[in-house]
Image (cartoon, rainbow, N blue to C red; front, side, top):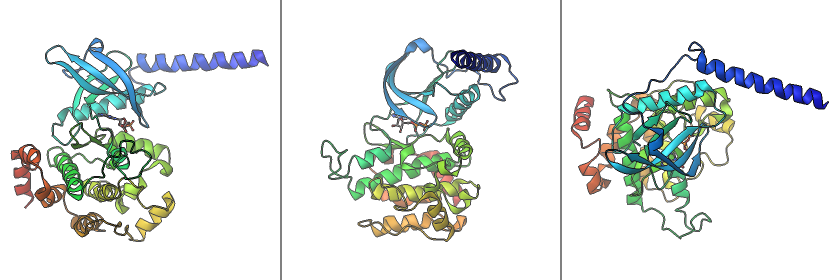
Length: 338
Ligand code: ADP
């Protein structure tokens, strides 16, 4: 028996080696390759710190990028899981490639890529307060996670967060970029040390969705998906629906949407043209905005620019100084929309 076990182990190791050599040596094996460019960072200028997160497809560390020109910068370092296949690694780098075009205050910024040595790395702007869902749950009164007794966000603060997310999404959705996120949820928004909320994971969205699909509907973010997204049709208006669910997450301080319903029940619920009721203590206007995002007809849903404009009265000074909505580009997009 020992002989059989060691023989099988030997064959397994051989097969694994064959696969990885094949993958790296045979260019036809992988339909995509990543070509290093001006975003490439030397491995030696990256200091990897503590692990801060683990997603479905990558592990995330805090770290420092020692830029020869600009000095040290705090970064988040994303690396594919150790057992990721070559193709998944290439997808990981390709998706980072998408982020190179993107520069907006309310979208998490790419800092650089390490693609010529292993492990592959994607360096992102460091968002010290973590993902929005955790941020919300740790601000709940009487929560065991609220260790320092932080006060819950005021409604004005909630509106500010909603505005920042709408602004980031308006930038991504504009005609030039036309990025459809597909996985907009509080867990995919990140909060900076100054409390600014930014959109993350949009570059990864396609891959994330394909992976969700590959692993079955149980893994799809159905609670954030519109009726047409559940049928496989995506557009910026399906992102608007998800945005409505994010508003619901904000006002409930990070509850799971459609509480008490299973995945399948959520799909049926949405299919029967039902929407979540107004959460207790939710301002009427906030709920009315959610309801408009959840309109059955796509054309009746507001655009992200409409939403940002509607929420602008809650903008702080920083937002008025630097946001997509108040930029030249944003103003022209708004004009073009009318
Ligand atoms: P995946 O895309 O593989 O699901 P995520 O991007 O969701 O991985 O990252 C997992 C976790 O890592 C997040 O929930 C967050 O806590 C942390 N994280 C990701 N990016 C950053 C960042 N730029 N700054 C700070 N923390 C981050």
